Length: 438
Figure 1 (spheres, rainbow, N blue to C red):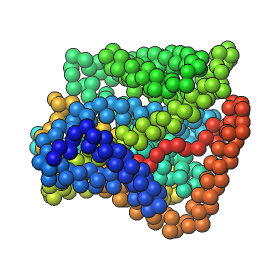
Figure 2 (tube, helix red, strand yellow; figure 1 turned 180 degrees about the horizontal axis):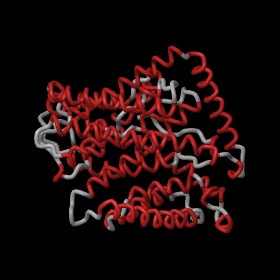
Figure 3 (cartoon, helix red, strand yellow; figure 1 turned 135 degrees about the vertical axis):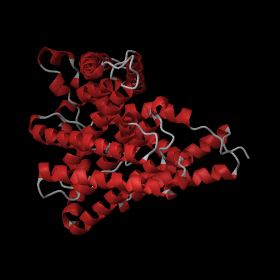
Figure 4 (cartoon, rainbow, N blue to C red; figure 1 turned 180 degrees about the vertical axis):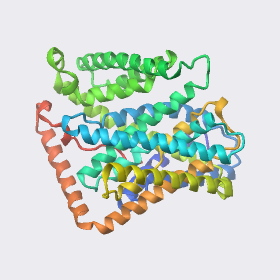
């Protein structure tokens, strides 16, 4: 039986996406991340594929394309969440400091563990393998913290978003250093970064001003195509292409800040704001599909026997201990004693998988078992689940009231948007969160 014929493939992908939507509903009621259910689904499919005798399928070309699109969508989705306001300066800086220090410290400790326990692992390769394991998953965290207090929820949104972006920048900085001919060192990296930011700002202003004048209703995928084109050209020019996506997201999400003075007269805020809302929705939808396919394929490709290895278990447990040890120290330093459930909310997710498959061939180490990746993803997700359940039991009333208030706010916002002709009157903070649970 050919399970990968055209019609069968359409049926299989459709069923997977429908199941992923159902998993999201289950995740909201149980606090069990949908990522775990998707991985389990992938493992079940792995055995089904083997049962039909088609276990020689190469999924990696598909993963490469999905990985590129996934990274772009994740960074854009994260950037659209960031509201740059003066009263948010201290929370933003504090969250960025925790994300940056936590990323670097976790990567260093994980790299030391990997180099010490895996044969053939150099320190350079260890840093590359450790970076994906040290990045928080904003796609899991942001939907999961909706029931927390506004201050804690805000912290997690900023921290996880910065962790995503900084982690991706660190990973591609490290990959750039693998090729001595192209490696320009730290100074060259910062010059490249400044050049990329300048090009990104010019491109962002141009895109918004041009697209607000396009009258066609079919323009959002054209906009995404332009962003993909800029990303590809940036890669060809050895620029930090993800910065282009990040800057564009920040500009369109904070248009009042970036369009001031004489620039304000060129901006049709009503049309530009409509583009932002529609882009937010389609980005979340696309990221949802990419997340679904990626974790299912990850489950299909994982070698379960590696989980039974004592070395995999030892390495994974040491990495998990380092993650929460570093996190505990940082949260106590920056936030005092009120660090629950923040301490437990540090899941690894899609970006961890995406970057793992993006490790260059010249840096790959045969002794590294993918089971470490699976162990850390599942471990951090279970710890977060336990922490959220514990917090809900200890604070039932405030969370329940917060949930009702959130639903009322969304209902009022939808009514306000539907009955408002001037979108410039809508405050950015009233925009409901359209991100899907991972």
